[in-house]
Amino acid sequence: MSRIMTIWLPRWPVQRRLIHDPALRKVPVFVCRRERRGVMTITSWAWALPPRSESVHSGERPPAPRILPGMSLAEGMAVLALTHGSRACHVAEIDHDDPAADRASLEQLARHSRRFAPIVALEDAGRPECIHVDVTGTARFFGGEALLVRTAVWTFAARGLHARVAIADTVGAAWAAAHHTELLNPPPAPPFRRRFAIVQPGEQVVTLAALPAAALRLDAAVRAALREVGIDTIGGILKVSRKSLASRFPHTLAVRLAQFRGVCAEPLAATFGAELPRVAHAFDVPVSLREVGEDAVAAILERLVGQCVAPLMARGDGITSLQVRFEQWAGMGERGPCPPVVIDVGLYRPSIAVRHVVDLVRLRMARVRLPREIEGIAVDVLAAAPVVCRQRSLFAGESESAASEVGMLFDRLAGRLGGKAVFEPRGVKDAQPEHAWVGVPPEARGSIAGSAGAPAQRRCEMPAERRPIWLLPRPVPLDVLAVVPDTADVGRPPVRFRHGGEVHEVATAHGPERIETAWWRGPIVRRDYYVVETRAGRRFWLFRRLKDGAWFLHGVFA
Image (spheres, rainbow, N blue to C red):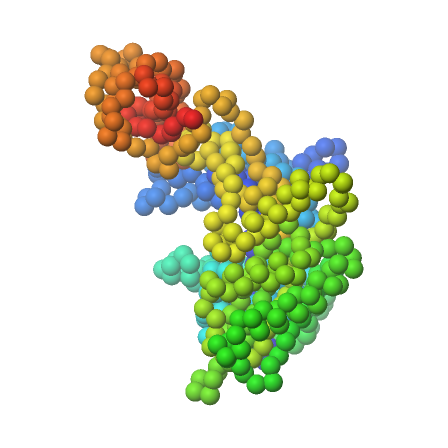
């Protein structure tokens, strides 16, 4: 009996934008399409970090407003204002719908999901949000289905994605369980446990009978027909005879029910665009990496990567994301096969340099624990992008190659230190200085699958003289030695303060600049900032906390 794992990414259009711009997690995000006569219709919406309400106990967040896809933007804003106030509508972010980009990014995630099994496909829908993986014979590689669903949830969480995962006998049952994991795991279960579910073999009818009828992937017309006769669950549909289903309801209901039970086959067909290269090398007998040596493994990798690069070069593309799998040999004493060791490599720019890609793989190999004996090596190209080729000028050869050399340096640093260790700060629109920046890949390149071409983050233009070049990770308390009398009323900076074992005399000061945050940001921040210049010529960025009058150092000017 087959076993299907469904990975559901709720509100995928919004999640894709949150990955490109993490600052959007703090505001409501609406993805809309423009209809006739200029009406904006909501395709998807979400608020990743909504404000906490004082009326809700134990710091929990209030229930999300009921804003359904298909509503007009004006209606959605009205519902949002009733729940969180008009301020939430003012800070909301509205973006235009882009189904092609949503599907392309989901296809890249589907290719990444091949680490779980080789047969992967997107759901058959106009706007897919699910990835189906046939894990019939691969679950044991991960220690069983229970560990496999946990691994899948953590893998997507590491990319900043919220995923719901379920395993069942059929695609329909896995889809239904993934969309209702919180009902299969009641609230006493921990929050992380509610993100995945496992339907035991042959038990989908009993386990999923209490789920709503919409879990059968029915359209609006069929759901309306079921509501007219008082049927609202899968169990209620199963009680109706086949003859009544065929005579009183559309034919799609019987088909979906047959697919749910497993009577009607629903094969998984890859719906990707251009197929990316996949090559593998299998050893006649399991070999030890210590005996073979790193150079021999590098030679095999260079040959495999070269075979992947050749078809990409023919169509003018280069590698932007690569996955290498070392098939591990379990040994004679093991009960079952062991999961492969997977190495993901992302590049900031498309590359066709085989030696450069292999060197990046070797850097990642030094940071992971490789198996003692392997049965084979597989290389999959997960993402590709067009390579920009330019003719070199006669006198500007060094300047033209500088950009590519910088990109190769970024790749090597990310391979040695990790992808999250290489970033550049970008200013975002936020009043609180600690949250007024976000780390993005250098040159705003790299996407959720490690490819190039991600959209730039929202820049925040601020006067250079009002913000220091060096902002401390956390404000440092200052030992104020002398202050102007009645400073709290006058609003002046200290005359003398000690920092780093040195006493500083304030010569001039500019300010105050008051910064306050609203209640939905958590603890309220109320500060008065000053730009002070000492008699020694140094410039500091100080602020006074209005709650208790304490002084802090937050930055240093050049």
